[in-house]
Image 1 (cartoon, rainbow, N blue to C red):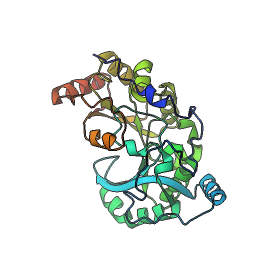
Image 2: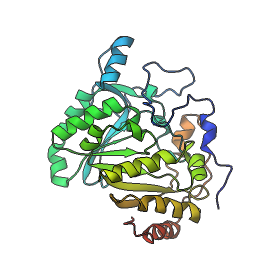
Image 3: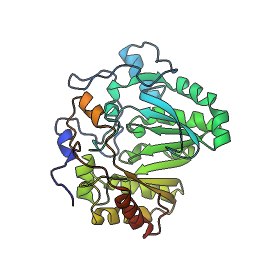
Image 4: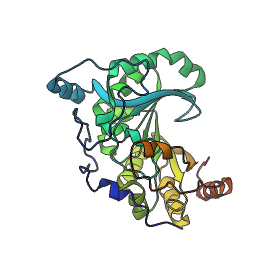
Length: 305
């Protein structure tokens, strides 16, 4: 049963509106009311971009030569097939109630790095990627919030023969150019909820851009792995799950659905950032509950894990 007191839209009341299809690109200087974060956290081994004037910085951002990142890590059996270098972008237009990376919400709080530095780090793991059928995944935050930077990373990885994946909500799907789509091998598309009102309460944003983006990827025959986070009292109503499955079933290039049980691993992170965590008392779903929801997706003919 949904708890209608849970609502992500309250987080957006005092924030600048990011319209669907807008660039969403970050500005170099921080706002006074944003949450500070230690510079360079999680970017060990990757050099910061050189010092630039404000004008030089803005121009470098527009050309996609620099971007704002939160961290990177090397993982196996997560974020796509094989061993992967997952690059976490800073900045996201959504305010998901269950966000496990709330310190990636504001691009201005990330660390400025060059595309060249990230591509150099990728190249070091090419042999590992080849052996494990892995690659690089661009996550966040929301990578499509920095489209020019993402485009350069995709192009560079493709030229090196590295498998690429984009983990996205699809809300800023119009920022993905046809060339970027061609350079991406896999899309991890997060479907936060299947009913429009549930989606807005979960994320603070409308559902339709995600649906439209999935249809565009499917029309281009780009492989999609869809993800659905199961949160008791927020996303687990049967009608909401059925609606999410119906949306995914339309996407003919969808090869996999992952139902991810909600966890409380981010609770301390929200607290340390001084953010109001509305799900602090939510009990994660049981294995039986999670499997029941997976069966709903399977009943729609979806390959579900």
